[in-house]
Structures are given as C-alpha cells and as structure tokens.
Length: 378
Ligand SMILES: NC(=O)C[C@H](N)C(=O)O
Image (tube, rainbow, N blue to C red):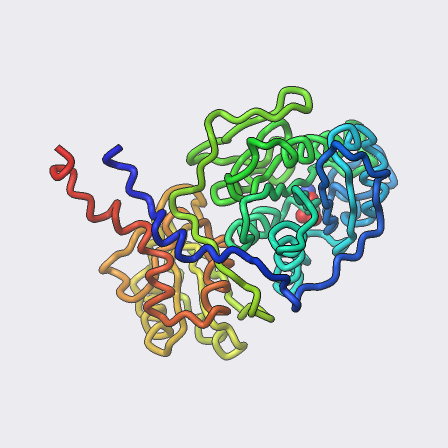
C-alpha cells in the first residue's frame, strides 16, 4: 500500500493511555440509573442540552422553540427501547443551546468522558453525549482529539424539539446508543450519529440550518449507517489519517482563540483588537483554500511576528488548506474546518507547545502528501 503514508508513528507518540484517574475532573453526578441487567453493556449518557432537549408550545414549531429544557431522565425514559441494548446511567452536564457551550464546559466534558471510559477504574463501555447541533461538531472534534482510549464516544442531537410532530430526537438517541454499544464502533474515534447515518467527528459537520439530514461528511463520506436501530459500518475500524490525540489531564483552562471570517478585501484589521482583548491565537476562515487578501496577509504576518499563531482554514468548510509561501509563518489547517482548527489550536496552546510545535502539529500530517515523489513507488 504505497500511498498509505499516514502518521501512525506520531499518533502513537501522542496517545497517552490514561492509567490513572484525572483528579481535576468533575465528579460524575448520576441522576438517572436504569435497573441493572447483568448481560448488557453500560452506557453513560451525558446530557448537555440542545434541541434534542428542546420544548415549544406548539407541536408544529421546529424553528422558534427553546433548546435545553428537558432533563436527562426524561430523555431516556421517553425511549424505553434503550434498555433492551444497554444499562443506562444519565448525568445532566448542562442544559443549554450548544451555542452557549463554553471552553470550560468542553474541557470538563472531556475530563468526564476520560474518567468514565479510560481511567483504570472506568466502569462504562461507552459514552453518548446529547448535544445541540449548532456546535455539535466542535465538541465531537474536541473529544476526538482528547479522549485517551478506543471505547466508543457518540455525540447525538436533533433538529426538531421534543414537542414537535415527528421529533427526531428519540430515534436519534436510540441509534446513538445502539451504535455506541456495538463492538464494531470501537477504534474509530468520536462518532456523530444522526438521521440513520454514522460519521467520524474528525470529518463530520453540520451542513444545513434547518433539515434533519443536516450532518454531512463530504470527504470521505459517512462510515456507516443504521437499518432500523442496527448499526452497520462500510469497512473495518480505522482512525482518520490526520488525527492526533492529546492528553489534557494537566490542563485547567483553554486559551481564547478567535475565528475571523474571509470575504472580498478582508483586511484582518480586527486581529490587533482581538489581541488587545486577550486572544492567544487565531483561525482565519479564509476564502477558497485559505487565501488572504494582500492587506490581510500583512496584518496576519504582524501578529505572528508578535508571537500569536494564525491558522488558515477555509470558510468553504470542505477541502484542504495547505502551507503556502504567500503567507509565511501562518499555519495551514489541512482538512479541518475553522471551528475544529480553533479547538486544535486551543489544545496545543493549552499544552504549552512552542510556535514551531504548533505548526508541526497542524502541518506534519500533511507533509508526506505535499512532498510526495510518486516515482519512488515504482
Ligand atoms: N438543532 C439544535 O440543536 C440547535 C440548537 N440551537 C442548539 O445547538 O442547541
């Protein structure tokens, strides 16, 4: 397989198997436990809010409801079929629209997941996170990059509130749990399960503001799906080529990283203002393959000179941004969309990586492809 260059070696290097409990993690506060059935696996549902827990006065309303109202017990009790496939414990982590998930909440979520799944005293086989869809891919990517073991983590949401005619939440939750407890779901990274589809958090993103088929994985596509409530996978387990895993056990906060949007003539003059407000890094949701205007490139270079990293991603959300001599010292996001690149930059800065290490972490997985000399394979 000459083109299977990947980055397994560095991936292994970053993967630190947790064999101890993270004492800085918040305590598991289980408020719902199903009656225990010996032969079934144990799934922990961490409920964070979102439309899946949303409520409206009208059963035809799926646009102006209130997200994050229904509690974890009610979510589970509404789908008794869950208990046919798993023991369920539930914890209410938050109950908010996902646009209000903070960095602190994201950090405590990954610590909870690591303790529940990966620590030496871990007692769960899988974690399912109920989450609003607006930023679901951010949490899912963040977990993908920071969960220290190969047990399944599935993030699920809904596009219609729980009160709507044909609410999609209950079936999505059932499919998320049946996927999470499937042995084939292991070693694939964090998964997003919605609307009969399974995709990997590294590649998956929200693609429509309103419809139930909103999650897409344009490259490389869905990795599986569900027939009724039974998950299937198109191929055996594999991790995304560019994925790295980082250990946040000693991290107590994430540094602020801002995203600026690209359009004709973007001058990126706001970079300075954001640095003054405390930004420690930037992602530019650049035009096309991460292009910056002439003035934007000058302003980006100036903040980089002052020690603040600038990652170039693309507002197109699909495709690659690669290193470019046009924008020296900026960092290419590869296939990561802007919000995922932001999470990765926060992780790297929180771990105290040097500017060079930050650049390497983003670009090294791409290098083997960019310098590929095809002749040497023949
Ligand atoms: N469909 C949804 O879940 C949208 C909601 N605003 C949220 O992200 O929490």
